[in-house]
Image 1 (tube, rainbow, N blue to C red):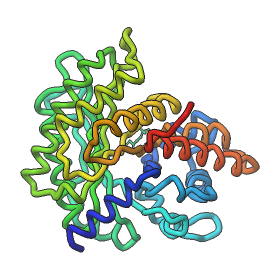
Image 2 (image 1 turned 180 degrees about the horizontal axis):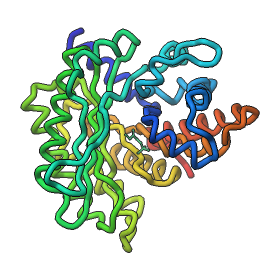
Image 3 (image 1 turned 90 degrees about the horizontal axis):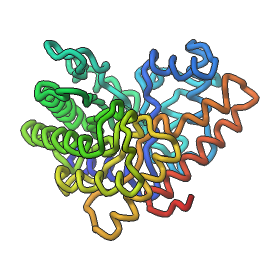
Image 4 (image 1 turned 45 degrees about the vertical axis):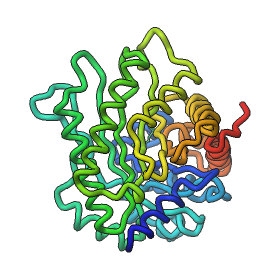
Length: 336
Ligand code: 13P
């Protein structure tokens, strides 16, 4: 595949009026989500839940691509249709999370570095065989007293860049996800400073590893006050600070920025994306701005379903509705 093909896939992932469905929860993480609605974390339940998501009629209108988990890309629905086939039948691009999780960073208590580079070249080849066209790798940066450390930012930026280079070598578009966590009492100003520094380091490392910016997607967190901060940031403030941060750090060659929701409320995540796209129209920014949400798309689906097969249709409708509202927000056309 040439750079042109990578660019075409990346552009299709951030097509106007569409966003990305993140449904790549690892087995322990999906277990937490299922437990919260009283569902046991069994393979059958995970298949049933993910079938509800991907079987949603009309999902391909608002969702360009879906990020799957290693288990899911190998499984089939109860009717016997392999998940990657179901994704493609919906007109959605299949992708896969390839990191193996954020682990304790040595000598830096309370900080994490994402692992998964060992054997990645071989795993990518296997995922291409399953039909994956893009990948995801998430790094987490924690804000606290004396945190993040330089060690944490640099180790994570380096790993993201090495992952992205391996993806492009295998003709896969890397989603590069440096998440600055919302947890903590930090102000929006601190979130801004840490996010700018993180994204600068990430693009420095991507450049050093030779990653072609036209063939990648950035998946950042929004610049926002911490969940414990007494001064909560408003919608306009978040949109303005996040755009300013992107302008300071993201080269124009990157085709798209697809935000994570990071524990914001469903409605809040939609409002922030909408406000950014409204402001972006006046700034003529070089990148598409859309969503790559997991929780902010799935919360209502889980609440509605609660393991009850008779609620599957209603649960699908909840997903379609949330996807539609975020698709409108990706155009700056959401009217609450
Ligand atoms: P949230 O939208 O729930 O933050 O998840 C996005 C994601 O893919 C995290 O890696």
